[in-house]
Image 1 (cartoon, rainbow, N blue to C red):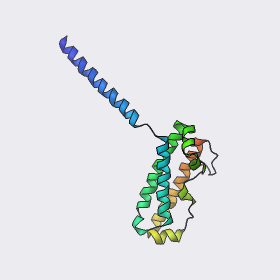
Image 2 (cartoon, rainbow, N blue to C red):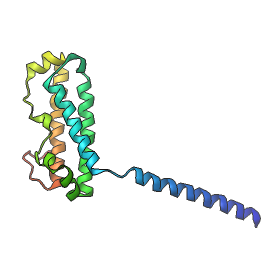
Image 3 (cartoon, rainbow, N blue to C red):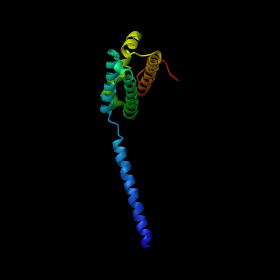
Image 4 (cartoon, helix red, strand yellow):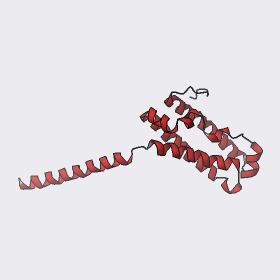
Length: 154
């Protein structure tokens, strides 16, 4: 009987530790809406800076920064789905623009080719990622209730 009690106490202790870790994890995983809005805006600004002043030293870095921006937009979509009103209050102006700021920068093929010293593969990758950006912003539009100006992507 005593042996079973010790095993039961160990088992209960393990369950308590697991439960505490789950609670801590849930608290850490909570998304901060204002922080997410700021991160999305900041990551967009970084990409804008690259495109406004293309430099060979940022030839590959811009792709990492665009990927990072996509992650922030996906997080923004989660915020909208979680609490649409709070998200629109925190960054409604950015959301209502309907696209990231870097998409408003005129696509200048020669400026990009000469500034970044890109090859055709890199230019095509950038064009593909512009398409992905439109797709993500269509998701933002759907989640926020904004009428999208973009055609439906499948």
